[in-house]
Image (cartoon, rainbow, N blue to C red):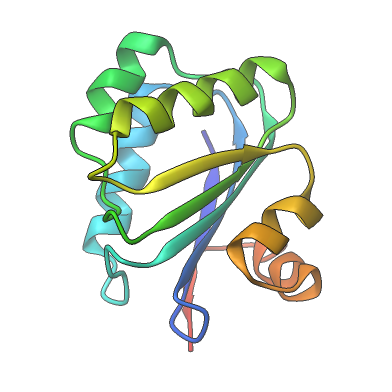
Amino acid sequence: MPYRMIVSLDHRIVFSRVEGAVGLPEIEAFREELGKHPDFDESFDQLADLTRARSAPSYEELRRIAQRDPFSAASRRAIIVPDDVHFGTYRAYDSLLGDDRATVRPFRTLEEACEWIGVSVTEARTYLDEKQSRSAG
């Protein structure tokens, strides 16, 4: 799963884009890198573009991932998904997290996700189109 992430201190958002297969090993690698990122705070929101993802984690993988989710209950996570399978997957993930962890909402378009997360589409595209992971002031 090639991925990129930008941790924006100004927006208090983790912008990420994922391509290819998405399973437990890939998500754990992303989570580990995020947890070590010097600018990451668990109360940040997330805008994740999964429109180029080719597979989704299984329910069992989701259950395991939910046990160690890095975001807090104050966080909102907008996930832009490519299809109905991913939409259902991330609705299930939100249910697995329960009320004491971040709220996860799948969206079909960048515009809907940006409106919910509270960032302009132009700014989101700038971050999501970055070629490598980094911090942003």
